[in-house]
Amino acid sequence: MVNNYEESTNKIIEFAKKDKSELKIDGTIGVLVNENGRLNEIKLINKFIKKNLNYKTKGYGDILGDKEFNEFIIKWIFSKNYKEMISSFSFGATSALSFLFSKYCLNKRLLVPSLRWRNYDLIAKENNIKLKEYNFFDQNKFNINGLKSLIEKESLINDEINVLINDPCHNPTGYSLSACEWEEIFSFILKTSLKSKINLILDIAYIDYSKYRLQNLFDIINKVNENINVFFTFSFSKSFGLYGYRGGACILYSLSTKEREDFIKRMKLYCRSTFSSCNTLLTSTFKNIYFNKENIKKRIKDNIYLLKKRARILIKMLDSEDIDYYPYEEGFFLLIKCFDSISICEALIKEHVYLLPCKNGIRVSIGSIPIDKIGPLVKKLKICLLKNSKISVN
Image (cartoon, rainbow, N blue to C red):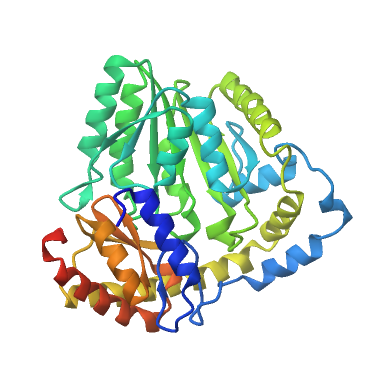
């Protein structure tokens, strides 16, 4: 057994790929599959891709995506355009995060929750960023006081504070902040910005799978002053099922013209030195998606229903077996409470069950587990936890 989360994750994923058994339950990957275990595609989007696969999209595109693409991205997410917003194409939300980490947080500190997507740590390590964490939960609610306390401490030693929040549909717990929680968080950020510059990075990769539209959040954060930058990282993977195509956007909302101009300069330099130009096939396809947004959003609603159905079944079975988990509201993932998650996850390999170990938890990808696999998953998990009863959080 390995003691490193990253090594264990790689080991489990490798075993899952090789396993051809009918008993296989793969809850490692953050994708949505149908009840046959195949990628749940949106057929209309497939038609758009085939339609746009021509000589025009095989040539180089604009470095950051053309004007129409970036206008449509902002409208898709926020329902309308804002002159204080600037957008750029990115190769998934990961590329957008990598850009922000390298250009705004390099050799600095970044405030993050204790429960988080592990890729944040990998990107931070590559950019010599020191992560300062607060406990994500306090009595089954978001630990607002923990975040506020960390921001306050940071303001005493730095004139620039970097904060990362993954919301809604938090990975790995499935928790979403309420409007009241956002009000309190942003009021404190606004207060702190009077003495320190704030870079707030919002990972909204799962926004289209949330009951809370971003417009509701924007009604709160549009109270920014010129000392606050709000960055959004958006993904085509979850919204449109285009996981392997690698598409997304990085958006800045700032009242400062200088900050918006600087964002473009930094992004152009980053793009030129990494992937050179945008994916013209995806920018063209997204325009078709936007022009047919009502049909696409209906299909996304169907996907949300499927996720909710699986989540209800999983939670009911976990409750019946007295398996504890962190508060879940919506999204692709649920996190089982567990102290020694590496031991449990590696023991489950023998049962053809593949889940990912996290700090104090085991991540279950609801999206990648068909309904008929949920029962066997919970039973095997229960047996494994009983064999290692000292490991369970409860």
